[in-house]
Image (cartoon, rainbow, N blue to C red; front, side, top):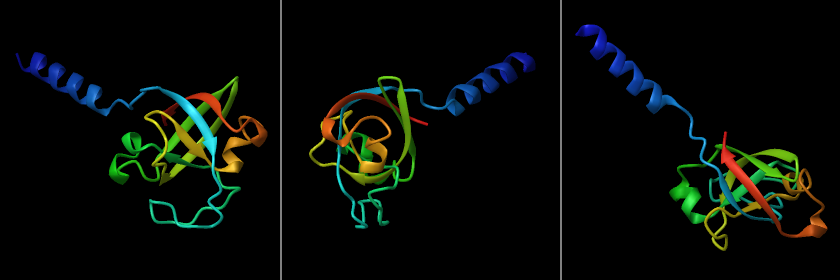
Length: 118
């Protein structure tokens, strides 16, 4: 009986410890932080690989400093959450120019991406 209880307890811990692999999809646009303070409270530069999340994913700041992996047409960028994007729909993101250019030219303006917390 003890082995069964131990196995169930270990399985529960493993499930709760597993990283979230939820994928999001939405528009990615770009903005210029210009050294200003983001909603997470630290300055960011245009060349930094940073992102602003929609209010749903920003979650009142609970996702500040987390990294997200953004995918677009075979390209990838790892960006750090530093800001809130109040105009972004759920799943959409606003990247710094440095991060956006890892995926597409700034001239594209708006691209359809998938992303997840890493």
